[in-house]
Amino acid sequence: LLENGAEIDMVEHFSSVLPLFTLCEILGVPPEDRPRFLTWMHYLERAQDLAVQQAAAPITPTLELMQFVQDFNTNVEEMFDYGRTMLLKRREDPKQDLMTAIARAQVDGALLADEYLDGSWLLIVFAGNDTTRNTLSGAMKLLTEFPDQRQALIDDPGLLGGAVDEFIRMVSPVIYMRRTATADTTLNGQVIREGEKVIMYYGAANRDPEVFPEPDQLDVRRANAGKHIAFGYGPHTCIGKRVAQIQLEEAYRQILARFPDLKATGEIEIAPNNFVHAISKLMVKRG
Ligand code: HEM
Image (cartoon, rainbow, N blue to C red; front, side, top):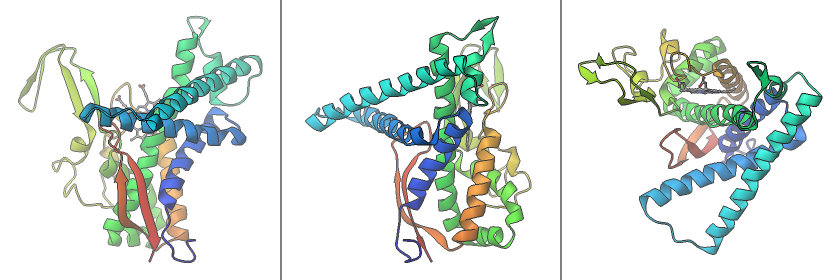
């Protein structure tokens, strides 16, 4: 298709597969089971979109919607069962994978209880999937908007390592996290009392002109790009940072080498999601 110069939804498909299958590889999910993860993620994302729609205006319950709810429940049940079965198998028959590490982890000499087992492996999938996926798509959009920067990367792929942080800074896929103040404090003149909830908008910090001059400009040579806080800060900093950076760097090394003229067409669908900046569709073409 690409050879014909036809428009394809390559980024949509590519970016939904790469991060998810990478996580499957780390967890130890065999290749034949990986497409099931794509289906489960599809149902979870669609349900989230519907919840946002429902919050804006009540949705009329159609037959199609009721069928969706039924399929959603079946899929979520399947997903939990899949993880539990796999974790129990790993307790009996350990392998060199993350599922084994989770299955055999001990706290105060006891194996993790079932509810922690579910949460542990699903947190990896939820946290590592659409964050990396949307940075992949978002970077394609940025490279189209800043053709001189794309050319700089094609001319010198050695810049990719730093460029990846610049992509993540500008996309900032996680929109916010919330914290509770443990003591009275003042931030930039704003008094925050102990116990108050504070929302941290990562994108705002990552486009702070005092830290990043011309913050809306993609600059693949930006010396302090790595100072962004899109992965969070402090004890809960993202544990998948390197996994994400390695995938993004390699994906763009391959894309730019094989399809140097690939561009986003401008046709884009943004999911109604206020937690992760989510591109559900991004069309690309050559030329
Ligand atoms: C560009 C990609 C990614 C971004 C922007 C991102 C961003 C974040 C952010 C903002 C947090 C919360 C930090 C906090 O609360 O202070 C976080 C936590 C986390 N991330 Fe990522 N993440 C990415 C990729 C990944 C990947 C690939 C994985 C798994 C391999 C992952 C696993 C996690 C986990 C398990 C946590 C929870 C850590 C904790 O609460 O201690 N993330 N990430």
